[in-house]
Image 1 (cartoon, rainbow, N blue to C red):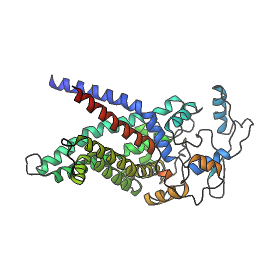
Image 2 (image 1 turned 45 degrees about the vertical axis):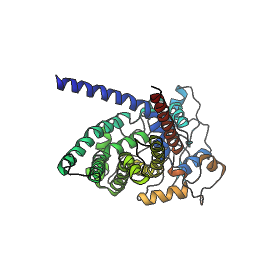
Image 3 (image 1 turned 60 degrees about the vertical axis):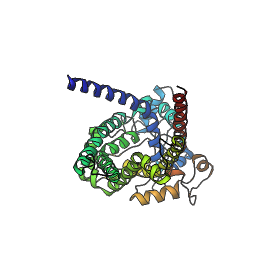
Length: 374
Protein backbone atom coordinates (compact mmCIF):
# COMPACT_ATOMS: atom_id res chain seq x y z
CA UNK A 1 0.00 0.00 0.00
CA UNK A 2 2.82 2.39 0.85
CA UNK A 3 4.55 1.58 -2.42
CA UNK A 4 1.35 2.18 -4.38
CA UNK A 5 0.75 5.48 -2.62
CA UNK A 6 4.34 6.58 -3.24
CA UNK A 7 4.06 5.69 -6.94
CA UNK A 8 0.79 7.64 -7.17
CA UNK A 9 2.34 10.70 -5.55
CA UNK A 10 5.34 10.45 -7.86
CA UNK A 11 3.03 10.25 -10.90
CA UNK A 12 1.12 13.33 -9.68
CA UNK A 13 4.34 15.24 -9.18
CA UNK A 14 5.66 14.18 -12.60
CA UNK A 15 2.42 15.28 -14.25
CA UNK A 16 2.47 18.65 -12.49
CA UNK A 17 6.12 19.10 -13.43
CA UNK A 18 5.32 18.35 -17.07
CA UNK A 19 2.56 20.97 -17.10
CA UNK A 20 4.86 23.61 -15.63
CA UNK A 21 7.49 22.66 -18.21
CA UNK A 22 4.96 23.17 -21.01
CA UNK A 23 3.96 26.58 -19.63
CA UNK A 24 7.58 27.78 -19.37
CA UNK A 25 8.83 26.15 -22.57
CA UNK A 26 7.87 28.93 -25.06
CA UNK A 27 10.06 31.37 -23.15
CA UNK A 28 12.86 28.81 -22.81
CA UNK A 29 12.75 28.21 -26.58
CA UNK A 30 12.90 31.96 -27.18
CA UNK A 31 15.88 32.26 -24.82
CA UNK A 32 17.75 29.47 -26.61
CA UNK A 33 17.17 31.00 -30.04
CA UNK A 34 18.32 34.41 -28.80
CA UNK A 35 21.47 32.81 -27.43
CA UNK A 36 22.48 30.91 -30.57
CA UNK A 37 21.50 33.31 -33.38
CA UNK A 38 24.37 35.05 -35.13
CA UNK A 39 23.08 38.59 -35.55
CA UNK A 40 25.51 39.83 -38.26
CA UNK A 41 24.33 37.08 -40.60
CA UNK A 42 20.67 37.51 -39.72
CA UNK A 43 20.71 41.26 -40.29
CA UNK A 44 22.66 40.97 -43.56
CA UNK A 45 20.20 38.36 -44.86
CA UNK A 46 17.34 40.72 -44.13
CA UNK A 47 18.97 43.37 -46.33
CA UNK A 48 19.51 40.92 -49.21
CA UNK A 49 17.02 41.61 -52.02
CA UNK A 50 14.76 38.75 -52.99
CA UNK A 51 12.92 37.82 -56.15
CA UNK A 52 9.15 37.88 -56.54
CA UNK A 53 9.09 35.08 -59.10
CA UNK A 54 7.74 31.59 -58.47
CA UNK A 55 10.62 29.22 -57.67
CA UNK A 56 11.44 26.22 -59.76
CA UNK A 57 9.82 22.95 -58.50
CA UNK A 58 13.29 21.44 -58.12
CA UNK A 59 14.31 24.28 -55.79
CA UNK A 60 13.86 23.45 -52.05
CA UNK A 61 12.37 26.95 -51.63
CA UNK A 62 9.44 25.82 -53.80
CA UNK A 63 7.94 23.83 -50.90
CA UNK A 64 8.09 26.84 -48.59
CA UNK A 65 6.43 28.84 -51.36
CA UNK A 66 3.57 26.32 -51.64
CA UNK A 67 3.15 26.14 -47.88
CA UNK A 68 2.99 29.92 -47.61
CA UNK A 69 0.38 30.14 -50.38
CA UNK A 70 -1.68 27.38 -48.75
CA UNK A 71 -1.77 29.28 -45.45
CA UNK A 72 -2.72 32.49 -47.22
CA UNK A 73 0.59 34.23 -46.59
CA UNK A 74 2.63 36.13 -49.13
CA UNK A 75 6.23 35.18 -49.56
CA UNK A 76 9.21 36.15 -51.62
CA UNK A 77 11.74 33.73 -52.97
CA UNK A 78 15.11 33.99 -51.31
CA UNK A 79 17.98 32.34 -53.11
CA UNK A 80 21.05 31.57 -51.09
CA UNK A 81 24.45 32.82 -52.20
CA UNK A 82 27.69 33.12 -50.27
CA UNK A 83 30.04 36.04 -49.90
CA UNK A 84 33.84 35.98 -49.79
CA UNK A 85 33.78 34.96 -46.10
CA UNK A 86 31.55 31.97 -46.70
CA UNK A 87 28.52 33.50 -44.98
CA UNK A 88 25.11 32.90 -46.47
CA UNK A 89 23.43 35.90 -48.09
CA UNK A 90 19.69 35.52 -48.53
CA UNK A 91 17.59 33.89 -45.83
CA UNK A 92 16.23 30.41 -46.61
CA UNK A 93 12.49 29.97 -46.26
CA UNK A 94 12.79 27.92 -43.07
CA UNK A 95 14.77 30.59 -41.19
CA UNK A 96 13.37 33.33 -39.00
CA UNK A 97 14.53 36.88 -39.43
CA UNK A 98 16.82 38.69 -37.03
CA UNK A 99 15.33 38.28 -33.55
CA UNK A 100 14.95 41.22 -31.22
CA UNK A 101 15.83 40.85 -27.56
CA UNK A 102 12.21 40.43 -26.40
CA UNK A 103 11.12 36.86 -25.75
CA UNK A 104 7.49 37.59 -26.56
CA UNK A 105 8.45 38.89 -30.00
CA UNK A 106 10.42 35.69 -30.63
CA UNK A 107 7.42 33.57 -29.62
CA UNK A 108 5.17 35.58 -31.96
CA UNK A 109 7.65 35.14 -34.83
CA UNK A 110 7.75 31.39 -34.25
CA UNK A 111 3.98 31.05 -34.19
CA UNK A 112 3.53 33.23 -37.28
CA UNK A 113 6.24 31.63 -39.41
CA UNK A 114 4.94 29.42 -42.26
CA UNK A 115 7.24 26.47 -41.50
CA UNK A 116 7.31 26.74 -37.69
CA UNK A 117 3.89 27.42 -36.18
CA UNK A 118 2.39 27.11 -32.70
CA UNK A 119 3.87 23.68 -31.98
CA UNK A 120 7.39 25.06 -32.37
CA UNK A 121 7.16 26.84 -29.02
CA UNK A 122 7.07 23.40 -27.41
CA UNK A 123 10.26 22.12 -29.02
CA UNK A 124 12.36 20.15 -26.56
CA UNK A 125 9.70 20.22 -23.81
CA UNK A 126 9.74 16.45 -23.25
CA UNK A 127 13.53 16.40 -23.24
CA UNK A 128 13.63 19.22 -20.68
CA UNK A 129 11.07 17.44 -18.51
CA UNK A 130 13.04 14.19 -18.68
CA UNK A 131 16.22 16.02 -17.67
CA UNK A 132 14.50 17.75 -14.74
CA UNK A 133 12.90 14.56 -13.41
CA UNK A 134 16.12 12.55 -13.63
CA UNK A 135 18.08 15.37 -11.97
CA UNK A 136 15.54 15.59 -9.13
CA UNK A 137 15.79 11.85 -8.57
CA UNK A 138 19.54 11.32 -8.98
CA UNK A 139 21.10 14.41 -7.36
CA UNK A 140 19.64 14.00 -3.83
CA UNK A 141 20.35 10.26 -3.97
CA UNK A 142 24.01 10.80 -4.85
CA UNK A 143 24.37 13.61 -2.32
CA UNK A 144 22.91 11.40 0.42
CA UNK A 145 25.26 8.56 -0.49
CA UNK A 146 28.28 10.89 -0.34
CA UNK A 147 27.17 12.36 2.98
CA UNK A 148 26.73 8.90 4.45
CA UNK A 149 30.10 7.73 3.15
CA UNK A 150 31.85 10.79 4.61
CA UNK A 151 29.96 10.68 7.89
CA UNK A 152 28.28 14.04 7.55
CA UNK A 153 25.02 12.84 9.10
CA UNK A 154 26.49 11.25 12.22
CA UNK A 155 27.96 14.51 13.53
CA UNK A 156 31.55 13.89 12.51
CA UNK A 157 31.24 16.02 9.33
CA UNK A 158 31.23 19.79 9.04
CA UNK A 159 29.49 22.39 6.91
CA UNK A 160 32.36 22.54 4.41
CA UNK A 161 32.11 18.82 3.74
CA UNK A 162 28.37 19.08 3.27
CA UNK A 163 28.82 21.94 0.81
CA UNK A 164 31.41 19.95 -1.14
CA UNK A 165 29.15 16.90 -1.39
CA UNK A 166 26.34 19.15 -2.64
CA UNK A 167 28.53 20.68 -5.35
CA UNK A 168 30.06 17.32 -6.29
CA UNK A 169 26.67 15.62 -6.63
CA UNK A 170 25.24 18.43 -8.76
CA UNK A 171 28.29 18.47 -11.05
CA UNK A 172 28.35 14.69 -11.42
CA UNK A 173 24.64 14.40 -12.22
CA UNK A 174 24.78 17.43 -14.52
CA UNK A 175 27.65 15.85 -16.45
CA UNK A 176 25.88 12.46 -16.63
CA UNK A 177 22.73 14.08 -18.03
CA UNK A 178 24.52 16.57 -20.29
CA UNK A 179 23.68 14.63 -23.50
CA UNK A 180 20.02 15.42 -22.81
CA UNK A 181 20.87 19.13 -22.70
CA UNK A 182 22.67 18.85 -26.03
CA UNK A 183 19.72 16.98 -27.52
CA UNK A 184 17.29 19.64 -26.31
CA UNK A 185 19.42 22.41 -27.86
CA UNK A 186 19.53 20.64 -31.22
CA UNK A 187 15.77 19.99 -31.18
CA UNK A 188 15.00 23.62 -30.38
CA UNK A 189 17.40 25.12 -32.93
CA UNK A 190 16.60 22.85 -35.89
CA UNK A 191 14.10 23.89 -38.53
CA UNK A 192 10.63 22.48 -37.89
CA UNK A 193 9.81 21.93 -41.56
CA UNK A 194 9.49 18.17 -42.25
CA UNK A 195 11.56 18.68 -45.36
CA UNK A 196 14.53 20.11 -43.49
CA UNK A 197 14.15 18.57 -40.01
CA UNK A 198 17.11 16.38 -39.11
CA UNK A 199 16.19 15.01 -35.65
CA UNK A 200 12.85 13.33 -34.84
CA UNK A 201 13.06 13.12 -31.05
CA UNK A 202 15.37 12.86 -28.09
CA UNK A 203 16.35 9.21 -28.67
CA UNK A 204 16.87 9.75 -32.39
CA UNK A 205 18.93 12.87 -31.65
CA UNK A 206 21.25 11.06 -29.25
CA UNK A 207 21.68 8.12 -31.62
CA UNK A 208 22.33 10.39 -34.60
CA UNK A 209 24.83 12.57 -32.72
CA UNK A 210 26.65 9.50 -31.42
CA UNK A 211 26.82 7.98 -34.91
CA UNK A 212 27.89 11.12 -36.78
CA UNK A 213 30.07 12.87 -34.21
CA UNK A 214 32.28 10.23 -32.63
CA UNK A 215 30.11 8.04 -30.42
CA UNK A 216 29.39 8.34 -26.70
CA UNK A 217 32.95 9.51 -26.13
CA UNK A 218 32.23 12.73 -27.98
CA UNK A 219 29.06 13.31 -25.94
CA UNK A 220 30.87 13.06 -22.62
CA UNK A 221 34.57 13.73 -23.20
CA UNK A 222 34.81 16.06 -26.18
CA UNK A 223 36.43 19.30 -24.94
CA UNK A 224 33.75 21.27 -26.81
CA UNK A 225 31.15 19.77 -24.45
CA UNK A 226 33.05 18.56 -21.38
CA UNK A 227 34.73 21.82 -20.33
CA UNK A 228 31.62 24.04 -20.72
CA UNK A 229 29.53 21.41 -18.91
CA UNK A 230 31.88 21.23 -15.91
CA UNK A 231 32.21 25.01 -15.69
CA UNK A 232 28.49 25.59 -16.01
CA UNK A 233 27.34 22.98 -13.51
CA UNK A 234 30.05 23.82 -10.98
CA UNK A 235 29.17 27.51 -10.89
CA UNK A 236 25.47 26.70 -11.02
CA UNK A 237 25.86 24.45 -7.97
CA UNK A 238 27.68 27.21 -6.11
CA UNK A 239 25.07 29.86 -6.87
CA UNK A 240 22.01 27.65 -6.38
CA UNK A 241 23.12 25.55 -3.44
CA UNK A 242 25.45 27.71 -1.38
CA UNK A 243 23.69 31.09 -1.45
CA UNK A 244 22.50 31.02 2.16
CA UNK A 245 25.88 29.84 3.43
CA UNK A 246 27.72 32.52 1.44
CA UNK A 247 25.46 35.29 2.73
CA UNK A 248 25.87 34.13 6.32
CA UNK A 249 29.64 33.73 6.04
CA UNK A 250 30.55 36.77 3.93
CA UNK A 251 27.92 39.34 4.92
CA UNK A 252 27.46 37.93 8.45
CA UNK A 253 23.68 38.21 8.10
CA UNK A 254 21.45 35.69 9.87
CA UNK A 255 18.19 34.76 8.16
CA UNK A 256 16.26 34.63 11.46
CA UNK A 257 17.67 37.70 13.17
CA UNK A 258 17.66 39.99 10.11
CA UNK A 259 15.19 38.56 7.58
CA UNK A 260 14.84 41.78 5.55
CA UNK A 261 18.58 42.26 5.19
CA UNK A 262 18.95 38.57 4.33
CA UNK A 263 16.30 38.97 1.59
CA UNK A 264 18.17 41.96 0.13
CA UNK A 265 21.41 39.97 0.12
CA UNK A 266 19.56 37.13 -1.60
CA UNK A 267 18.43 39.52 -4.33
CA UNK A 268 22.01 40.67 -4.89
CA UNK A 269 23.19 37.03 -4.94
CA UNK A 270 20.62 36.02 -7.57
CA UNK A 271 21.48 39.05 -9.69
CA UNK A 272 25.17 38.20 -9.47
CA UNK A 273 24.31 34.64 -10.48
CA UNK A 274 22.53 35.89 -13.62
CA UNK A 275 25.43 38.17 -14.56
CA UNK A 276 27.99 35.38 -14.17
CA UNK A 277 26.02 32.40 -15.48
CA UNK A 278 24.32 33.87 -18.56
CA UNK A 279 27.53 34.34 -20.64
CA UNK A 280 28.68 30.83 -19.74
CA UNK A 281 25.32 29.34 -20.66
CA UNK A 282 25.26 31.34 -23.92
CA UNK A 283 28.70 30.07 -24.94
CA UNK A 284 27.81 26.50 -24.00
CA UNK A 285 24.54 26.61 -25.91
CA UNK A 286 26.28 27.91 -29.03
CA UNK A 287 28.84 25.10 -28.87
CA UNK A 288 26.06 22.52 -28.41
CA UNK A 289 24.20 23.86 -31.46
CA UNK A 290 27.16 23.30 -33.81
CA UNK A 291 27.63 19.69 -35.00
CA UNK A 292 31.19 18.41 -35.30
CA UNK A 293 30.95 15.59 -37.79
CA UNK A 294 33.50 12.82 -38.02
CA UNK A 295 31.88 11.33 -41.14
CA UNK A 296 29.57 12.35 -43.96
CA UNK A 297 26.20 13.42 -42.57
CA UNK A 298 22.99 15.19 -43.53
CA UNK A 299 23.06 18.96 -43.20
CA UNK A 300 21.77 20.44 -39.95
CA UNK A 301 19.36 23.19 -40.98
CA UNK A 302 18.42 25.66 -38.26
CA UNK A 303 15.59 28.15 -37.84
CA UNK A 304 18.09 30.90 -36.95
CA UNK A 305 21.48 31.50 -38.59
CA UNK A 306 24.49 30.14 -36.71
CA UNK A 307 28.03 31.50 -36.73
CA UNK A 308 30.95 29.75 -38.35
CA UNK A 309 32.16 26.85 -36.13
CA UNK A 310 33.90 27.93 -32.96
CA UNK A 311 37.15 26.31 -31.81
CA UNK A 312 36.31 26.38 -28.12
CA UNK A 313 34.91 28.41 -25.24
CA UNK A 314 37.50 31.18 -25.44
CA UNK A 315 37.11 31.56 -29.20
CA UNK A 316 33.31 31.68 -28.89
CA UNK A 317 33.49 34.23 -26.09
CA UNK A 318 35.86 36.50 -28.00
CA UNK A 319 33.97 36.30 -31.29
CA UNK A 320 30.64 37.12 -29.67
CA UNK A 321 32.21 40.19 -28.04
CA UNK A 322 33.96 41.23 -31.27
CA UNK A 323 31.18 40.47 -33.77
CA UNK A 324 27.93 41.01 -31.86
CA UNK A 325 28.56 43.99 -29.63
CA UNK A 326 25.61 45.90 -31.02
CA UNK A 327 21.87 45.26 -31.00
CA UNK A 328 19.55 44.52 -33.92
CA UNK A 329 18.56 48.15 -34.52
CA UNK A 330 22.17 49.37 -34.54
CA UNK A 331 23.20 46.60 -36.94
CA UNK A 332 20.30 47.36 -39.26
CA UNK A 333 21.31 51.02 -39.34
CA UNK A 334 24.96 50.32 -40.12
CA UNK A 335 26.56 48.41 -42.95
CA UNK A 336 29.32 46.85 -40.87
CA UNK A 337 29.74 45.53 -37.36
CA UNK A 338 33.53 45.34 -37.41
CA UNK A 339 35.18 47.09 -34.49
CA UNK A 340 31.99 47.44 -32.42
CA UNK A 341 32.98 45.42 -29.37
CA UNK A 342 30.52 44.84 -26.55
CA UNK A 343 28.97 42.36 -24.15
CA UNK A 344 25.43 42.59 -25.54
CA UNK A 345 25.66 39.26 -27.35
CA UNK A 346 26.57 37.43 -24.13
CA UNK A 347 23.51 38.64 -22.22
CA UNK A 348 20.32 37.85 -24.17
CA UNK A 349 17.35 37.96 -21.82
CA UNK A 350 19.29 39.43 -18.88
CA UNK A 351 16.75 42.16 -18.23
CA UNK A 352 13.95 39.60 -17.94
CA UNK A 353 15.92 37.58 -15.38
CA UNK A 354 16.71 40.66 -13.32
CA UNK A 355 13.06 41.75 -13.40
CA UNK A 356 12.02 38.26 -12.30
CA UNK A 357 14.45 38.47 -9.37
CA UNK A 358 12.95 41.77 -8.27
CA UNK A 359 9.44 40.33 -8.65
CA UNK A 360 10.29 37.36 -6.41
CA UNK A 361 11.90 39.76 -3.96
CA UNK A 362 8.77 41.92 -3.84
CA UNK A 363 6.42 38.95 -3.48
CA UNK A 364 8.55 37.72 -0.59
CA UNK A 365 8.05 40.98 1.26
CA UNK A 366 4.30 40.91 0.55
CA UNK A 367 4.09 37.38 1.90
CA UNK A 368 6.06 38.36 4.99
CA UNK A 369 3.71 41.29 5.63
CA UNK A 370 0.65 39.06 5.26
CA UNK A 371 2.07 36.55 7.74
CA UNK A 372 2.83 39.27 10.28
CA UNK A 373 -0.78 40.51 10.06
CA UNK A 374 -1.95 37.28 11.63
